Image (cartoon, rainbow, N blue to C red; front, side, top):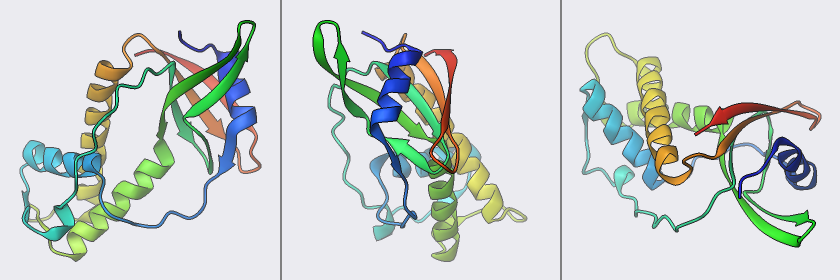
Length: 174
């Protein structure tokens, strides 16, 4: 089962929540993977033994997603939702990717890697360069993952306005 635009709209109306300020906490396994992937792809050195990189892998449960939603703005939605259908209530799961939050988080990671001297870049490269290559690696890993876990599902762009209003655009299929 996949979700159409009207069902995504229902999910958002019943389920949106305002994001609060982001606080840097420990790296996630996916973020560590992004950093090491960028290091391999762009040739910079990392102090891999530092405690900053010590994260536990997350066992990816076999979720069955019904859609992929890319989100921008200062609101989000929960990934699980009880959708009312003609056959009754159905629990749905959507894969969420909050683009603004990821960009903010990657910028924090780049700053932390530079400030703690955990990365050695080529001469002339700086924090902005590191941010850009980390973001590129993040995008590549995201699309690799989506091909595995969300193949043939619809993709939607959900853009929130500052007052909580929103627009949904159909973006195609994974």
